Amino acid sequence: MPILETPFARLDLLRQPEQPNEPLQAFDAADEYLLNQVHADGLAPQARVLLQNDAFGALACSLAGHCQVVSSGDSHLGHLALEKNLARNGLPAEQVRFVPASEKPEGPFDLVLIRIPKTLALLEEQLIRLHGQLAPGARVIAGAMVKHLPRAAGELLEHYVGPVQASLAVKKARLLFAAPEPRPAPVSPYPTRYRVDSPAIELLNHANLFCREGLDIGTRAFLPHLPRALGTLRVADLGCGNGVLGIAYALNNPQASLTLVDESYMAVQSARENWQAILGERPAEIRAGDGLAEQPPGSLDLVLCNPPFHQQQVVGDFLAWRMFQQAKAALVKGGELWIVGNRHLGYHAKLKRLFGNCEQIGATPKFVVLRSIRR
Image 1: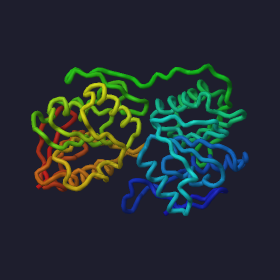
Image 2: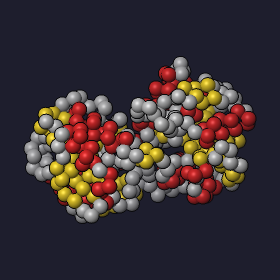
Image 3: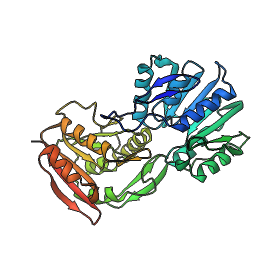
Image 4: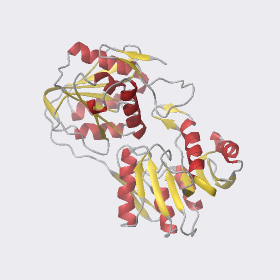
């Protein structure tokens, strides 16, 4: 397991979720570059430091004990990684305060370190929320691997913070230094909204939502096939996003009890607000979580899932396979998992291997809707 060594600490770090023979490490050269830069600039013990999008806690664990650290991000898995990596390296949990991206970190901050996220709308919302939160003389430094650093990231920093200067590339990583200048209070363009025809609902989407501007084509393929009038089933929308599958199912199944879960705090925030707007006070459990890891075994009758095929910039089916396994564990005997996926991903073979059965319920030229039953 690679060790992160910087002037602040020597750390053994894990990614989340863990997988056997993990091919990827929990930090990269951009983390090292940021930490080396902070050390070169000097860091006072009383400095209040805000970390944005610190994927698995590499920055927070390094700076813990050296300053007052607030870490903010949109990933529940990232939050779990931070907690586990603090404990793994013998660091007290109270040395880092975590703020979900669905909430606003409260300054003033003397230093802000930003890992450029994949979704630039999230970066924009985070920069908007920095307004009025910077202490006099504050520094704002963003970092990314060069291949994941679009020009628009620097433009957003310039627009919301101040003039930007780019560093030289080191080990294929680059830093952007934004010099804070007075700016008028910005108006956030988020959340966005769009309408769905069937069911006829309007959905709200906070900044980090997948397909924030309109219904994604996988969900569009899934909606006409959602089961109806099944009575008092216990149903989970796994990886719920803005809650559209769970809400659509609930509208057609008034007696069902729903659980909506996602690892994105902004997704959960969106799903909760959409549920309340469309279904009012109807009870539902809507939570951030590591999929169904916390769901009691045999506690669900039906799981609906439009699985992700990436974690940050890493593409693969590891997360989807893990969600299928979690669903099987949470289902009662005779319970069903319904999913939608790209044809080329071959989910039918994976589900047949896991459940012993898989039936195609519907299809478009690009997507298939599949059902597996726990025997």
